[in-house]
Image 1 (cartoon, rainbow, N blue to C red):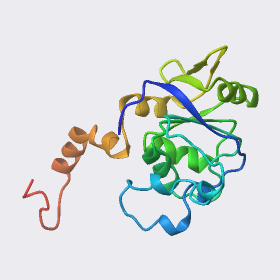
Image 2: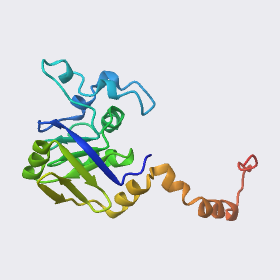
Image 3: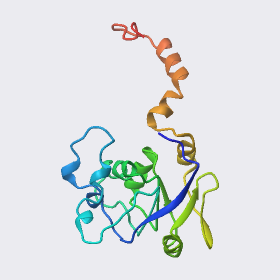
Length: 187
């Protein structure tokens, strides 16, 4: 997973509230086992609407309760695969927000007025280290769990976090008495 420090650029605006995970990535596209290839199906049904346009910028600005509905991990995977690295919204569904951080997608929760100002500005800078979003004419601070911030700043997914404990795991395994066959003989 790529570390996140600062994400700067034009913003894509999806001015909709209560966007659920089935709207983000419809169920018929959940047949892959990889985390890639979902971006082309992002907002599949809406993309067929006349006048639909959602540029693949790194920052998505959207309404409240983004990612509600099912707990499918595919929704953040599709957003990331499309090109987004940060999502700025008034609020997120809890499981969706957690799934975002596990794949390196930064959810940023701000007030309605701040989200609207960023959308109007059309360009922003999301600074994870400073926990701040800056745009022409304003800035806003955001909260993030310190452990999640550490993981995103350092590009650590769950596997990478576990591998940081390799020495402790190896020590445990070497001290553990085994009654059965040895499974580490090939290591």
